[in-house]
Amino acid sequence: MKSRTLITAAICFFGFIAVFFFSGQAQVYFNLTALLVVFTGTLGSALLGSGPDGLRRAWRCVRTAYAENSVPERILVKELLRTAHVYKRTGRLALEENAPDYPPLTRGLEMLEDGYTEAEIREVFQAEAKAFVQYREEMERIFRNMATYAPSFGVAGSVIGLVGMLVGLGDTTLILKSIPVTLVSTLYGIVLANFLLLPLAEKLRESTRGELALRRIVLGGMVGMIRGTDFLKLQTLLNAITTKHDAHVDGLQVIREIKANLSRPAQPTTAGRLELAPAVKRS
Image (cartoon, rainbow, N blue to C red; front, side, top):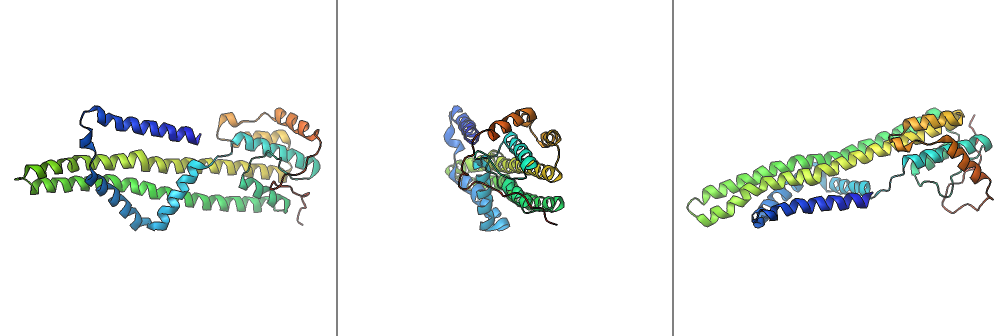
């Protein structure tokens, strides 16, 4: 998914650049002075507003959003149903060897194994989700602010070009040098804001929504296990929480898979995977 997104974006970007060459005067659209005015002005404003650490965290966050291999909702629902079924039958909590590597799922099962109540698990999940959203919104705000600065500095570059034209009224060479700065600066500001900064902010928002959806599914599974919810009722609940229609799980198919797995000879636990002892409820 990540590779297709980046490849598609690169193709669109180069297609956009190619339009300038079709005009027959591509050199007019490439001006170092205009580029420096827009880029350094936008970067300087962002540094004043968020500081170097803020920009580094924002860039690291967006890299994570593009690099992360999100757990499919369908896979997560199936693993929760399987775990809930085994837990209700045997009182044991364990993840399969091929279970999704998703930290909130592991933490949730660990809290369940430690005897956390439903209210305590809800409190922990809600606190983590709130902190996660606040952090992501802060990072998103940095990119949206930069998207606001860029067109403004494009206008500033146009003003600089106009001043150069006025100063050089008697010098044709100076006027010709100032015209590209006047016209191209605004173009650079608009392109930087709408082709890079705003899409990065939107990617962070999309990634945040996806992560929250996964955490809601895990919380629903934990609550269902604590309450001892019937398998089909838990399936209906988790399917209702999913945000994608193709994430809905057929409970009968999951039960068949569970029976097939239980009929296999026991295998040694793979190192690094979660293997929990029988849950002991706190008094």
